[in-house]
Length: 312
Image (cartoon, rainbow, N blue to C red):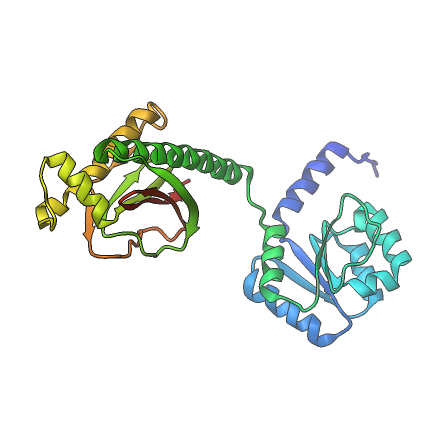
């Protein structure tokens, strides 16, 4: 006896979700030019090997495959979609079941009406392979909300640390030198550059981020601070007297901790390294851009710079 069992939509929907989750994400590459088609396919294979790639060598084949299968990405020429606008509009942009989630159009940007459910991206001529791969990776492997939140936390804490570090440097150097500092420049530089004649370099670590801080002085300014602090009249500091630049760093960091209060609570400050050499370079241990603040005094410049690297 045949018994008809009505389709259970709940079970069906759950199964479809499971199948969709387990299904390998797929890209459809359509271009009538074999050379371009193969070039795009090879780029995807070499750089985004986690996805499946299907070719379409003609417009009819492309439309047929779109009807039969749901694709995460369709890569095609922008001119082709304009020349066959009505066919694509009906199938790709109106029929939800046959619409790919994303479309990358190669070539000049065209005015195309499309559904809001389809994400449309353009790569203008000349074709840039690196930009294409980056775009595809962002489509298939978008950054999670957790990653975005972590970056935002690091960004806010970095801004807080840099602000208080700048204030602490300003106040400490003014107190030790008896000179007034004027902030002349805030800039970003690559991880190597000329700083000064006497530098203290110190590492600060926490669970969220770590940073390398350097405070550099010209020789006349450093001698002013040294002589005022020691009550002396030194013109050529010894190795021991040159090491006092590390003590300046310690005082800056002590004031920094005081200003930060309980935010964050787990900062660990290392022992300062000392660099003494006319117009030397300070290279930080982290491969990130360096934020620098230059202050001017009557006896030369002091530069405070920090390289900050997030850990979450």
